[in-house]
Image 1: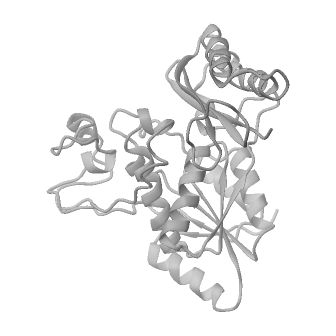
Image 2 (image 1 turned 30 degrees about the horizontal axis):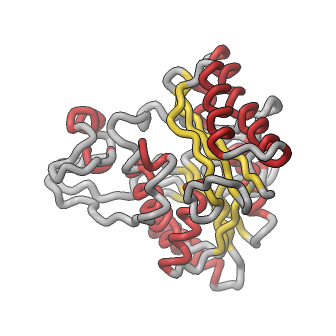
Length: 318
C-alpha cells in the first residue's frame, strides 16, 4: 500500500501546505467530499490523480447545506476507513477540519438540539440551514454564495438552502486549498453545473472536471445514503436506473415527447414503491426545462424510498 496521506485539520496549515508545494511548481487536484467514501468517490480521486502532481481530498460534513429537518445527524462517517482507502490511491493530503464556520457567541456545531427546535424558518421568514439554527447571538457566519438561476429548479425546489450551502462551502474550500483542478461527480448534476457557473462568474482559477456516474453492478447510482436502504427498499430503488434507461431509449429511438418521457419515469418509479420528488428533462448547461429533445439534455430525478432520498440522472445527446 502507498504511504498514508498527511492529515490536516487546520485551515491555515492546509493553505500553507498547498502554497509550499505550488511554490515548487507542483500542480494540485482537489476532490471535496463529505466522507464515508464509496467507489464513486474513489473514481473521482483516481481521476484527480491523473490530472495533477498532487491530490488533496477534503472530508467535511457541511451543516450549511442541510435544513434542520434533514439528515445531517444521520449522515454516515468512517474516517479511519476513508483514510485507508485514500492511502491506497496515493492521495497526498486529506483536509478534515472539525469546523469551518463562525457560530457567534453562544452557538456551536454540536448544538443539535438548537437545530431541531429552531425549525427551518429564520426570523426574516426565509429558510435556514442547520448552521444558522445552531448559531448564537447573530454574530456568526452570514455570507453566502448563490448561483441564483441554476439553484432554483430540480433539487432547489424541495431543498431551498442546499445549493447556497454547497456553493459557499466549495468557495471556502477553494480559498483554503487553492487547487488548480477540482473534480466533481455528475451524479449531483445540478451541483456540478452550479460549481462550474460559480467558478466562471467569480473568476476562481480552478478548472472544474465533471466525472461520470459510478453505478453498482445492477445500475443503482453509488451514494453514501445507499447504506440506509433496507434490502427491500434497495431493490425498489433499482426502478430509478431502469426507468431512466427506458426513457433515454425512447428519446433516441421512438421520438417520444418530454411529457411522455417524464410520465414513463414517474409511472415506473411509483409502481415500484418510490415517492417522486421531481422528474425533469432540462438542457444540460442552463438546466432550463425542455419540451423537445433536439439538443443535449439530461433527465434528472429525485425520489424517496422509505426515509432515504436518492437522486440520479442520465444525459441524452441526440
